Length: 463
Ligand code: FES
Ligand SMILES: [Fe+2]
Image (cartoon, rainbow, N blue to C red):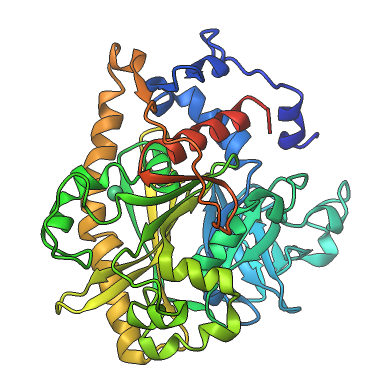
C-alpha cells in the first residue's frame, strides 16, 4: 500500500465533509483563524495525518536513553513510539505497534531492553525494530507470504539537536536541519551553551488538559509574550521574575525585547538585560547575571565554547521562551526560588494531542551537567514549581485553554475567529547576529501568526 504521507501529497486541497475548504479556515488578509479549528474532529484527523504524520516531533532528550537498550515510550501525534538506544549507540524511534495484530510491543514508560516481545502472541523484535521471530519457529507462525525482513517495526527518521531527540515517521520528510532552519542557532542558545550540556532530571511530568492542543502550541511555541502582562500578572506583582520594580503596562519585564519569528513556525522571545552597563565586557556581564541554570563560576568556561556573537546575545538579549513547530515549548529564564534567591527555570514541554478537546502536557526539567548538586536541585525545584504540571505559571495558562475550547463548541462561537492583527513587523537591529524575522519592541502577535500560517501550510499541502 502507498504510504499515507505519499497519498496526502496527491491531495493538496482538502475539504471537510460539509464542503468547507480547509484553506478557507484562515483569512491571510485579515489575519484571522476560524474557531472551528479548535473543536472539529475532521480538522483533528487531518492534523494527525498531514501535520504530525509528516513533520518532525520532539520525543525526548538524549540523556533519557544514555546506554544501550535504554528506552522510553512516547507519541508522535497519536502514534505511539519507542525511543531506544541501539547497540551501535544510535537512537532508534520505532512505531510501538506490533506488525501482527497491532498490540503495543512495549508497555513500559521507560526501562532497558534489547528485545521487545509482544504479549499477545509472542512476536519478538530487536532494539532496531527487526522482527526476530514468533514463538514456535518451525511452525512459521508468521506464515510465508511476507519475509521476516518485511515484518519489522516501522522505523522513524531520527535527528538530535542541542540534546533534543526529534523524529518523524515520514520517510520523505526533509532533514531535521531543514525543518529547524535558522531556529537551530537559537536552539543552541537555549540548550547548547556549555561544553558538557544539559541533563534531564527525573521522568517527564504529564497531565491532561481538556483543551485543544493548538491553543497551548500557538501561545507557547508561537512565543506569545502578550498574555503574560495580563494572565501572569501576579508573577510580576510578586517580583518572582527577578525584579521588584513597579510594574506598569510598559515597564513589565519581558514585555519589551526582541521577538523572532520563522516562516517554519518556530518562535523565540529574547529579553533585554537593560540594567547592564554595556562598557563591561560581555563575559563579565554574564558572570553578574548568568544564564538560568548556571552559577557565576561556570561562566568563564562559556568563553571557550561559544563565539563572540553568542556571548554578546546572552549578555544583552538572551532567549528566554520560545518553541519549535509544531508543539515543543522551550524556556530558560531567571526566576526566584522558593527561598527567595535568584534561581532559574530550564526545560521544555510538548503538547501531545489526545483528540480535538484534550492535550497531554509533558514537561521536562533540565539542569547543567556540571552544576553543583545543590544548585541542580534548586533549579529543578524552581522549574517544577514554576512551569511543571503543578507550576504556578502553568496553572494560569491551564485555566484559559479548556475554557476557550469549551466556548468554541457553540454554534455562533465556531463562526467567530481568533485574531492576530497586532503585528510588529520586521525591525531587526543592524548588529543582530541571528536569523529569522526579528521584531524589536513591545511583544505582539507575530510569532503566533507565523505559527498558524505554517500549520495551514501543512494542512493544505503547501509543505
Ligand atoms: S499482536 Fe503482537 S504477536 Fe500478535
Ligand atoms: Fe503563559
